Length: 158
Ligand SMILES: [Zn+2]
Image (tube, rainbow, N blue to C red; front, side, top):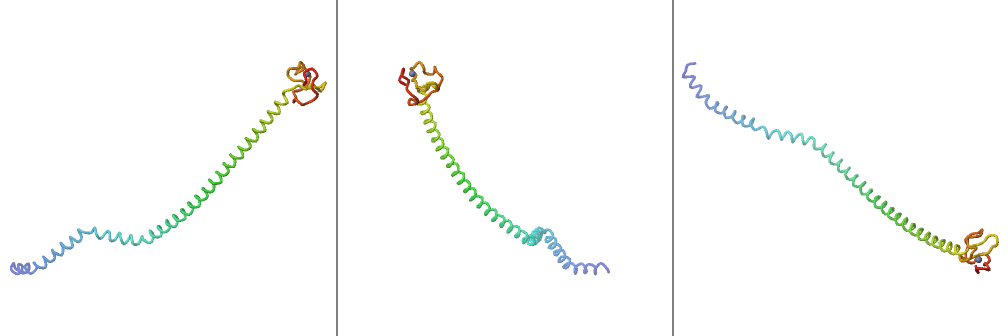
């Protein structure tokens, strides 16, 4: 191969070389741009994972629904308990108030009765009743008594 034929050869090669270079450039650009290919692959992976994710989501939704139901039930129970507690407390308060008033009335009556009983002195030996101005009042053996108990003392009138 002499120089002339080589030149011709080169000239004949020029187009394919340019084409080759162009192709290389294009492929280089294509290689330089691999980023969009990766998300596509990732998308494919994601597509593979999607059923699992969907299952997971549906499971979570089911659990959420269950929890909501439970929550609603708990709220109902809570309301019922509060109502019961309120009724119980009210009942207790009412009954306590009633008991208190009854007991206070009883206490008052007892005090009144006791006061009535404590106004006179009953001498056990004679069975006579003395008022608090009598000299036998609390000086003899006996006990405090009501104004209508026993026989009235002749000295003080009972
Ligand atoms: Zn007397």
